[in-house]
Image 1 (cartoon, rainbow, N blue to C red):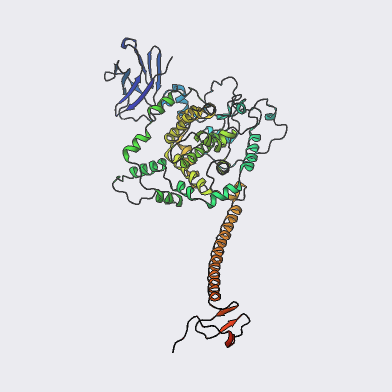
Image 2: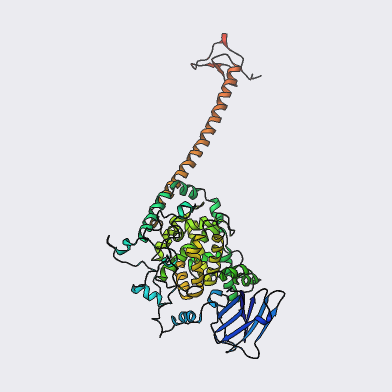
Length: 545
């Protein structure tokens, strides 16, 4: 069966469903309405939608077919007029079964906190680790997230994970065998020597060693001194920041014609963000941007229909931070326009994609982001990294829809690449589904808060960046002194040349070995004595009586 394209909107009392199904007859249409679910069938099309509220088929409900365009408009009444149905633009959420939606809602109630997630039909050659730790169980129950580093004893050499013939990786560690031939097909993103056998700890150790070898202190010093282009990139205002600013102004009731110096917040970082902005987006642009385009809707419809048994939700959110950091860096470097190099840049900077990393805390995640941002892309600058981290905060501040739109953008980039499309299968498809069906606003807001107050010291990267910067400043000052000294030496040389010229002029006016003193009646020899009258020459300028 084919799932047709569709859109859903609502008003105070009704839900409007527009279905796009070409080449069907009106007599073949079948509809069924059962409280939360709406079903449509017309061979070869089948559509089942599960709404967050109850709908009814009454005398006000209608259905019409426009045969010329293949559009079917269905109007259903709400059982409770005035009720607002949330997330009608998240198409994967609407396509979920009623049981899946009930399970998701049960996680937010006190009585059903211990409900286990649905078991996903795992494809052959994939695996999912069970959730066993108390911290992971608390996360599955949607309790408060703790983004600090957890401390666990190191596993011994007899750890059972070392006995596994194959390693798992990807979203929720559910894939294996996909990257078996990554090195043979020109996958320049993959940095894991043996992705099918290396454990997560081995991949992390390999990543750190590779980053240490890749870091170029001369490159970093050059970008630190010659930073004119980088400063222009830092001053660039991304559309996400303008969108956030416009939404905040609209929420505060400010008009676009009246732009007072409103602050984003009282904290220092947000004040700096507010000072940087030139002008927020217009209100109509904000509405257009927050809605999903036809291309994005088509991409969501093509996503796999699956439910995830997530073993470590915190690791999933942290991987999202890592991927968004890589995207934000490429977005800022290219001033918002993706290039043919964007998939490689995003993949290389993201430790999740390039090294199949699984993070357990926020600080190691940001450290890895900064290390790779200073080792791989065209511009490698600490201030640029901090600005990109602010961009990631802005995305989390904008919420789930903005993040989903970014992930769909990344997915489309990778889908159209001959080699890198594999990362859509490993991560991006699952992330797009998971964001619509399982991610919570509570966790997104928690991460936004943590990112906003996050501070990272340069010595945490392990590369002695401050020493290189001091050396760069000293070298720059020494070169400046040499330039000043060279200019003084040149001036001295010029004056010396003038004196020599005057001496040659004197020699041309007097006898050889004598210097004629203007205004004097005698010449002076080289030994300082005056020449006698027999050898006396006329002065250069005679004094007349």
